[in-house]
Length: 141
Image (spheres, rainbow, N blue to C red):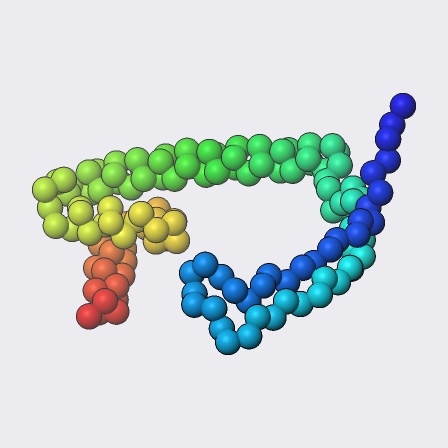
């Protein structure tokens, strides 16, 4: 058996006397009369914006797909950076060379890395890294 609570209630508002123990009493004492007001609280309804179980499952599915794509992208980026490193060493550059560091730094950006990997000659890669590095350093000054 359920009991229903009346959402409407009568509230009595009484004004406090103007005398207070914290302040000195004024010349006259006033006391307001009490007033009655009716307060009606609306019955709470279940929000229509509450997602359904299917909506939650769809969201979880999207989250998992995004995570898989990010993981795949990280793996691809790591493989491409390994190829850049391998190409630089095959071109005769040492890890202690300034050019080697500049090329690796430049290739951390996907578009630069893909462009670097598309060059077929050592000279083409060298020119690309030098020009791109110069452009980047000029912009930062």
